[in-house]
Structures are given as C-alpha cells and as structure tokens.
Length: 108
Image (tube, rainbow, N blue to C red):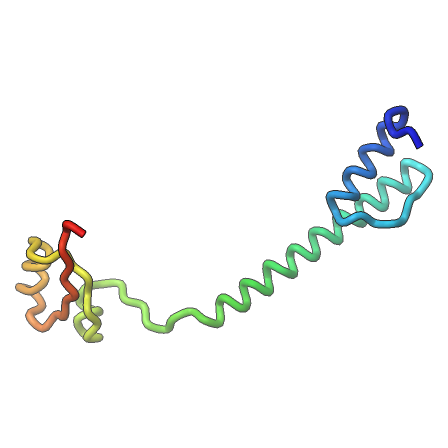
C-alpha cells in the first residue's frame, strides 16, 4: 500500500501508533475517525485512571504534623534549622528561650 497517495490513511495510522496501535483497519474515513476517537478515549481513560491511582497512593502517606509558625514548632518541641549566629536565631531565642535549634555554618 502506498501511503503517500492517501494522506488520511497516513494520519490515521500515525495517530493510532501514537495511541497504542489498534489492529482494526476500517476502510472508510468515517470509520477511521470513529476508531481514532475510540483510541483517544481509551488513552484519556487509562491516563485518568493512572493519575487517580497515583494520587490516591501518595495521599495516604501525607504527614499529620504541619507546622506553620515558629511558635507551633517550639510548642511541639521540634528542632529548627538555622544559620549559626544570625540575627534570626537570636530573635527567636529572645522570644522563645526554650526553642531547639540545629545550627549549621553558612560556609557549607
């Protein structure tokens, strides 16, 4: 078969190979459009299923503890990473003397 003389067949076969190559080969352009639409629908449905499954599996492992303020971190006794000797560290220590820090050097 010479596909150069039939551009609709060329587009049809190219689209089907992109969508997963259905082995059904209709002879009219209307039937090709229907099969192409069906293949595209299958691609969308399988993509939606995969995305929803991944979302469901990831959502099950979300952490329960969410810290939004420094006060919440101090109240929960959670250590905070800070650059050692900065004004931010000193200010937090002034307001929250019981705050726990994990200091690190700015040079690293």
